[in-house]
Amino acid sequence: MARSKSSIHKVSNPLQLGGIRTGTRDYPETGGGPGNRVALFDTGAGLRFTVAMGRGGDIIDATYNDTALAYLSPNGLRPPTHSVQRDDDWLYAWPGGLLTTCGPETIGAPRVEDGKWVPLHGRFSNTPASVIDIENPRPDKRDGSDTMSLTMLIRDTRMFGPVIEVRRTISCKLGVPEIHLKDEVSNHGDTAVDHAWLYHVNLGYPLLDQGAKLVYRGKAAMLPFTSKASSATRLNRFKRIPGSRARHAGKGEDCVFVDPPADRSGRVHVGLVNTKRRIGLEVVYLKKQLPRFVNWQHFGQDGSYVTALEPFYGSLLGKDNDHSRLASTTLRAGQTRKYELTLRVLEGNAQTTALMKHDGPLVPVADL
Image (tube, rainbow, N blue to C red; front, side):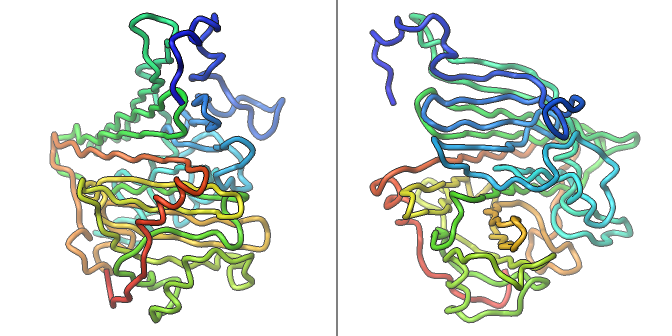
């Protein structure tokens, strides 16, 4: 939504239109002890979200006008802790949220790899960020900008290595309901280290509801530890959101590996459309940066009603169980890998129809 030149003279503080405010959020409830440093983004276009600077700069709650977009776990926004680095203990601290980042060395299921124990989804989301820069929009100035951005540094370090540094920038444009994320992951140690990176985009009610439609296409295979191989009919049935499922009680879940095609610019477009609310969420990323994709589904009957769109680099299954050339990925000493992700809220038939052009059938294959 463009701002006219005359309108910028009708406010004395640009935050009236939108921008970034920082503070702390109590844990577990209001009046409790200080929990996490947060940045509150208001795009001025109906999209508002919370960045947890205490948890790697991940995005927690997010709303568009009157619609919540993200799944929030029963844990709440807990302070970061490295005491959850065994088996699937990561789940004790996971707040859910619109975006959880997994890595930087390993992602996926707990396992033993190269003689070492690999915990669920790595350490990143339990590592605090330091703030490098905050830029708020200044449309009231002659040389002003409509951009708001937050740049953070997250360091995952250990004596004798690894020494991994992530420079993260989250930016929005005033009047546009989009989130742009850029990560630069660098190995500052003097030896190569394992590296994998996954964006866990967690959608929740009421954006996620019975009858909503997942948008993606391509070759597909069920993740081995959640379901047996499926026919094309059964695979494509996973793209229509059901109500709560009895078989998803407890740890019940489904995961579908997909190899979605990129457009002419090398970008992949996936998402979800809720036709009843005439709203959707689109996830856009470069396939050369994030060559793999999985859709996780857990439609529990206890409120844990969530699906996640997960582009990633590396392996969810580990070197011993993954036949892909990407099963073993590393960062050389001094090497940097760059990642970009866009989350775009869509409203109305024209925008959601444009996203649906990226939809299509799933074609079953034995392995991806």
